Picture 1: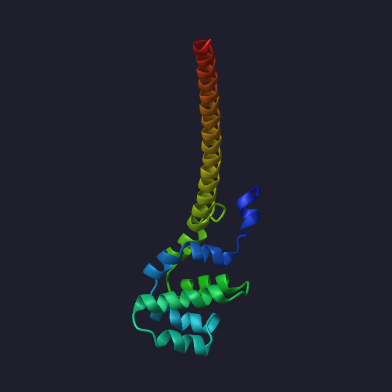
Picture 2: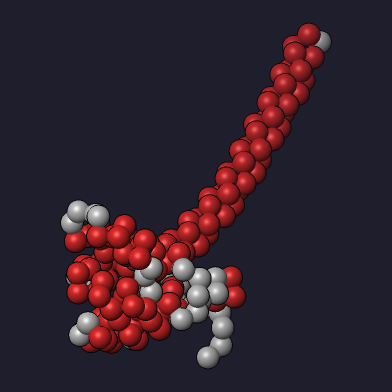
Length: 159
């Protein structure tokens, strides 16, 4: 597979797969089921206690994902998938495995589109400025011709 300029600019790692599926993971997963397996493989005691003290399933899942994203070890993604398998989340595992990471994430794609829009707008502004300058020159030429004609008429009238 050829790497695109996007891939060179934003190198992909396995955590990008999790980030890409963040809202899906938060919606589909139950922290209490995952916590048992995650405390073995990913979370330390302090992180586990921090999550346990939160109210609400969504807040716990958000915090859990935040902790996962903050870890820089290469095996975090693999351990997370193992936790999902042990917790019987086969549907989530298949979703993660089928994620296409060769295309940009929505946020990056939006940023690139906005940058392109800015360039287009800047180009349009330059064109408009050039048109205005050309119109001003034409207006000045018309006024100069008018003054020359008035000058000729006044010379003829005084003769």
